[in-house]
Image 1 (cartoon, rainbow, N blue to C red):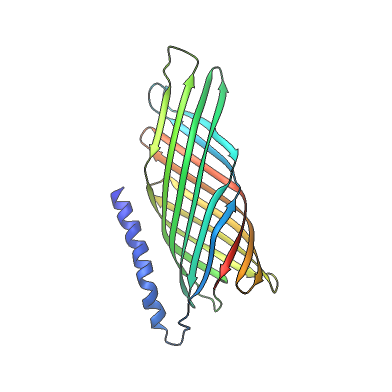
Image 2 (tube, rainbow, N blue to C red):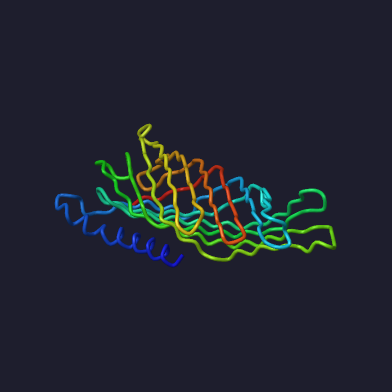
Amino acid sequence: MAKANFLAGTLAALLLAGLPVAAQADETADSDWSWRVAPMYLWAPSIKTDLKFDQPPVPSTSRFGDIISKVDIVLTGHAETQNDHFGVMADVSYLALSDETSYGNGLGTEASLDLTVFELAGVWSPGDDRFSGFEAFAGLRYIKPKIDAKLETDSPSVPDARLILDKAFSDFMVGARYTAKTSARTEVTLRADASLGETGGTENFSAMLRWNRTEKGAWVLGYRLMNVKLDTPGTGVKVTQYGPVVGYEMKF
């Protein structure tokens, strides 16, 4: 795990360190940087959390689906800067919720989940227009879950089982996006990326419609799906989030 942390962190640092060099290499390029910042998006996903127990007193490997299953609000933020062909972007999201689930036969779960996801990536934009056309990116995805799940039974002869997961995971992330102008004021961005390292793998997909209200700001409306798989010895957790996103983006 330490090696994965080191490799991911080193790669992100190299990407960021190379941006000024790349910008200076093209003397004819515009030296100004353009910014897009959304301090807070509201993401209202349906959330499903599946749990795998492989520890006493649960026999063998038992799976419990939807220990947390509800619609909730996830707070997310995004910041990005680009020159003519290179850029840096960062995303952060935070979720906190709890739920109780009954599986019948006196078996149920009580669980709480806090989940923070931070992303930092370098962006390569080969086109002539900033924040437009095809773009590739790579960097670091940092995931910090805090999960407390308790398996409860009505049988006095079978003790309750409990899973507590409170640690950080670092992944190498790679992805691409495509932005197309659909009118004088609107554009659509499709994004797909995946990461792998200390987690069991994550996938992220989104489709966003941006309405440029002015030159300094735009409303953003879209849909996002994200899967996060967290595996540790004896346990496994999968968190799925999918639903609409709305926010306001500042440009300068």
